Length: 229
Image (cartoon, rainbow, N blue to C red):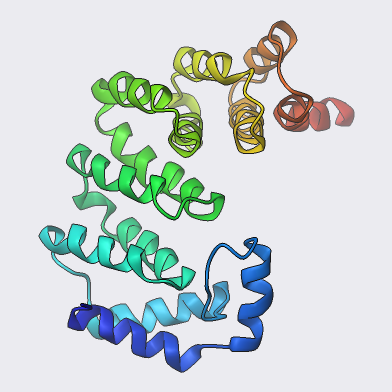
């Protein structure tokens, strides 16, 4: 049963709902989720209005609120969940990793998993680097594609702080996988890291058997830069 905090959010969503726009939004997500039909820009205005009127919940209430939001059928609730956690990120720590795992493996799709990986898991693990091997080891052995994708993507914003050895070892471990979302994530991770260490990425791609998709994505910025010379 929704608490009063979520009831107020529902009122805003219903007020701004656009059933006509919801149809292509649902289709874009391969019919996996229902939508109110509220696109990115008006969603941000709703967030602004909502937080101005209701503030942020206490950190101790976060897990219950988040899990209730995640059970709601419309995808806009999951987008709000991630935005809420991003606003609370300074109060979150390694004890919230199980909550992130719950979000990753439930209602899983790229739109939420990628944001969780880079905007939630990434900052929290950056503050608890000693547990990274344990966490990524667990996720890699889980057999869950979305947890494995998160292992590849949580360092996207680390730049010079990227653990290169870990990143490349994870990519090698998954290099033979055929899933599109794994191959795409490998390429994306390499592409982002190439902004920091293009030579390492070029050498790794040359020496490692990767899918054409991973290579194309991984080399995108390097090739673009070389064409400018």
